[in-house]
Length: 222
Length: 222
Image (cartoon, rainbow over all chains, first blue to last red; front, side, top):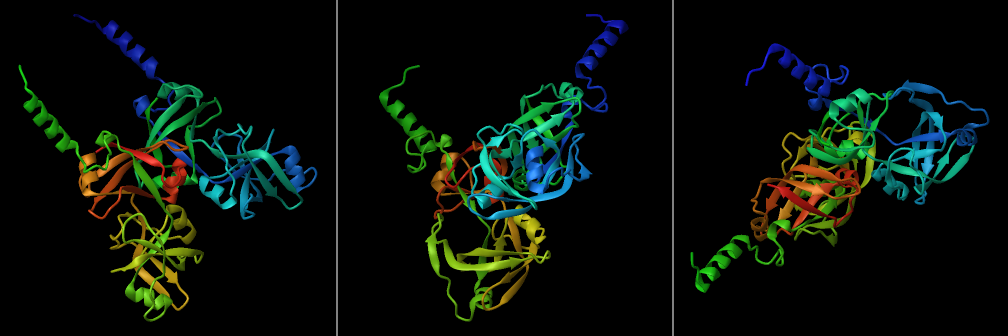
């Protein structure tokens, strides 16, 4: 079979267009791209009403550090959380901006201290999740639901999703070459034009695998 | 090809002898056998000399609970451990019997509280591991080495090893169908006639995968 230069060019372009991600993979093979990990410590999102109960009427959050996902920030404010054990965890960071509903994300390790039984969920999906009590300088809020263990998930842009050949709400498998080698199954993909490529896990996941913030992991299967 | 009853019997016996594990697999296919998990919380093994420094001359440990591996037991005695952060972890259980050298097994989570940097090791291999201080009712011991994070490992009898087709010091891969599905690589196999089949992981591993004591896991590859 003979093939001329024009045909070669067309084929190469077709392959490149299939793989191209708008430059995110910087010329490497798209599917070999690694994903940096961001480790989420326990934290709290607050509704406007709960913010005011806990910190006072008209109170505004004080941003102290931008987070990796655009528009999200850590605040100066912290709260004490308490569960049925009546043991407290102090200094739990509030993240901004305010949300429609308050939500407390803790680790399984934390859940044994508090004696709460949070389900593993994606952020925002709190219906029927565990109750928990928040104590602030101006008041106390007992959430009847809102305490979850976050699922393992990866944020990415639409270009990066194209790169990896995945779409919003897909689940992927991730290999972690940490101090103790580990594979995470059922990792949820979240795609949004404002997202930056980052995998979010909690402190239990990070400490089990023995990795720190920024460790690179590999998507091994869709 | 013709084959008579005697030949069939000889073949079946040969296959059975190849697969047989002395009954451990109870008639199921050997390699499909599941492994129950035992979760190790932080704990301490003591040498005779350190036991006497911490609890007094001539002191003997008080067994309160037999552990799954024959001859090993949890003791009434607990200690406070302290690292360079000068933050302490109280009530760390001593396990008996006494050993040739003292050893402190903690989780990565604990290591951040104490600010120690223990290597991931098999129990007993403490050369060059992290220093740590133990405080008891009668004295204090500062170990220059002895603090480790235990590696993931499976205890089994020689019959069970035959069943799984593995030998002492092999490494295997284990799949964990917990609240968050996980795979553990590089799991060390330890074979001894006194061992009972059990996989040992620490609280970080258990909490990351969302499993409790006795959860069954599967060896997926040698």
